[in-house]
Image (cartoon, rainbow, N blue to C red):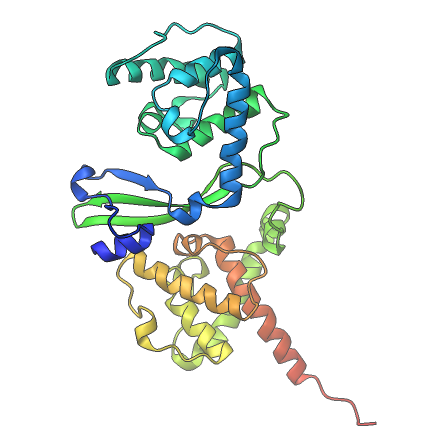
Amino acid sequence: MELESLYDLLQLPKGVEPPAEEMLSQGGKKRYLPPTSRKDPKFEELQKVLMEWINTTLLPEHIVVRSLEEDMFDGLILHHLFQRLAALKLEAEDIALTAASQKHKLTVVLEAVNRSLQLEERQAKWSVETIFNKDLLSTLHLLVALAKRFQPNLSLPTNVQVEVITIESTKSGLKSEKSVEQLTEYSTDKDQPPKDVFDELFKLAPEKVNAVKEAIVNFVNQKLDRLGLSVQNLDTQFADGVILLLLIGQLEGFFLHLKEFYLTPNSPAEMLHNVTLALELLKDEGLLSCPVSPEDIVNKDAKSTLRVLYGLFCKHTQKAHRDSTPRGAPN
């Protein structure tokens, strides 16, 4: 990855060093929060609520937290917080000065937390390594879980989610991937994303899914016939975005220059570029009734692929029906 593109991706100001490849071992990964995520109002509110809760809980011990990112990593505050919440005594040294003793203390605390939350280590969204390395997302996941377990009436902001950038060191250099991290749950109908017809179809009438797929495949093949293309497998043939873009171009009258997309994509990144472009075109035309992740299309998620094609299917079958309906006599 070029240095300039890494700056742009992480939204780093010039002068702030991006992660160097030598900082990550081969196959190593590190997560980053871009400035837009850190400044998200709900993300900031979540940290504020959790800090106030911790400081109120630990007030009798005269412990004050000023930064969840900087103050929680060594296990000291987590040790005192968990003992007070769970009303038990942990067998861990109170003051740990070396990195090794801090890690040991953190291990004891997190093992007790996971037992209390009835979580296996692999189920937890945190670990000794991520907390010790000041991974803010892991720390927030841990604190949210503790709050829900021991202070269920604590009013946490709902549906807090932030964009995260994961940098991975590969043989060919640094590779980046964007994702969305969900930190708190939906709590009201207003927060819930709207269900669509395919949520209900897959849940209540899975036996009808193939009939719907067949109808949409027939529609697609009618429209692609003039290009000499056909679709046999709806689940897989739209994953690279090429047929989807060509179909949108045919139906919506778009001319897409070959420089705008990859006609023969050779990597997941190129496939993702194509699908993202297609979804942006559909969104601009008002043809996406529910949010669709481009990653889901690339990963051959049948429900997401059907959602995308259904908008086109409905618009153009209804249009064909209107065009074929005889008009009444003029008044």
